[in-house]
Length: 304
Image 1 (cartoon, one colour):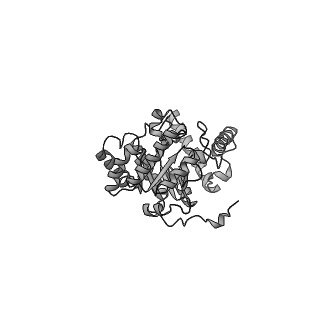
Image 2 (tube, rainbow, N blue to C red; image 1 turned 90 degrees about the vertical axis):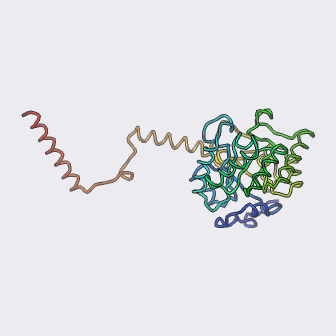
Image 3 (cartoon, helix red, strand yellow; image 1 turned 90 degrees about the horizontal axis):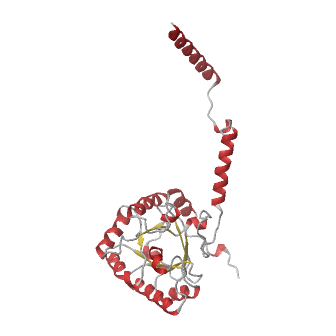
């Protein structure tokens, strides 16, 4: 059965969602989130009616060229968050707490979460982890900062999970992920990312927690969905997760545009008259005459 898109129009882009607004969407109209790392992407996502923008530490792999998210720093996240906020001031923006910016203790977590809000301009922060990080969630929320949780595949600890692979396929690990989700929700998170788990587990997590779930490779049963922008737009060709539907092929389009530009420059086709500025003919003639007189005078002085 197909659903007419007119039945579910995009939210008014002028109405910025608050954390309570996001939480209230539990079981309602599906939430839509994409990652964004720069001003132009944020502008276009906001214009398209995207509900939430995530300045994820995925920028380490998608933008900065790292092999994982681990090297990303607080300064990296703050820098990119500022750009996204400028591009989409009317959109709810979540900023990731990068690796080792919250794991040490509650005080570190609160301080760095505060930086993302105060210096970066984010509306909320996201951190990875379940039961072991519930205390951090509770401390940050107690400081007045909205927290989005993240369970299932947690990229910052992918090395200890066996790499970037589906989690929760056996009974023990599935129950652990469910317990993680419940702990994060109980600690005060207003929403929860569920990554790379079987659809059945994603649906069960969604049913068991009272906050909206945003799935990324967690099946259609979640309260919303999130994709990494470079996957969505077809810009990433090194990693191709099964869950990452490509809605455009901008990577190939970009390569073709660069190649066409290079061909035009080398062949003399660019710039042409349509892409050049002109000077009035009489001004050009006077300039040439003045330059010729100057050159003759300089030549005479050199010969004398």
